[in-house]
Length: 434
Image 1: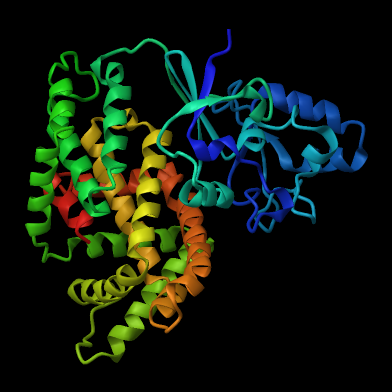
Image 2: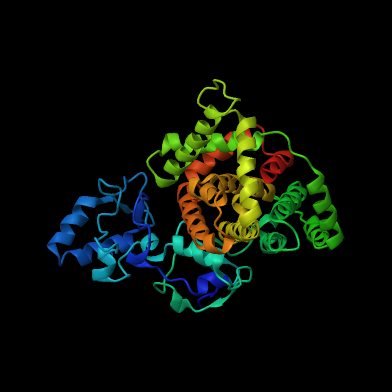
């Protein structure tokens, strides 16, 4: 019997925009084929000599050492970095001519992410798709509750599962859903500022981590910690402490600058890297024009970068702060629903890395040249909100494509944070307080 499929509200109405999308997903990424769909596609293209020529030129088998039934072949990108089967209308030629059945799972289902736990299949959306960003951040439907959805919304009956738990192997998996639910409730609590809610998550996960982690057996304290964070008085005390805490160290901008520079060095030709380079260059130009200018190598002095960033942030927050809080909260909830923190050694490691990702995203939004121009202009909130939202969509989906969904790059960042001994609650505060 097929498991019921549940999804947050924004995914109930998702439809691919195809050629109307502002930026095709058929570029830059590897396109893997399992053996079943490789064989189906090879059979289909036989009937068309032009398609078969393209198939033979661009579809390659993996080496035997790396080959498997699920990772059997791949489609090479063309010289411009696009899928060779992408037509001039921005549509997939294979899909247009042969339907969805012979397509690889990634081509057929992106940006849908399907995960299985117990009796349910969860459908969430990847923010590397601009339309998913729009629906997730701006739609009025219920983002937080997972509700039943018809299997008919999926491209085909048989679907790929990104992660699953049939029978929990340890206490970490056993209590996953209840811990995640509490995390989502903390982030969804609009009685508190967004930064405070991030602090709640860091505090909650830090307290859990010592006895709730990968391979743990006894988890009797999990229920106690969940109950503690359901207490309004406890949250009010944490809220009061958080706003009294003063962060004067520019450690967050040091890490953010290093992450962006690393991304630029490794993938300088992608759109996110180009934006990051433009942003850092603008900060550098501003610094070189200032009375504080001094030779400091390639980097901007962290104290001055932090000061300049906060000046931009104060202006941005005064005009768009309320809507931006909602967008960032929805971003975090999407991550919690889609990624599953049990992929990390303990919940704190996941939340700590998530706070760093949020800090980088906030830096990019705040420092985007067009957003800076908007907040420095006389244009009203009402007259500028649509353009502001367009920039938010652009930044979030580019960020997701280049960093959030780039597991190799995130692993490099994770290793660097751990080697620098920055995997601690004290450092979480620095990134949250950015």
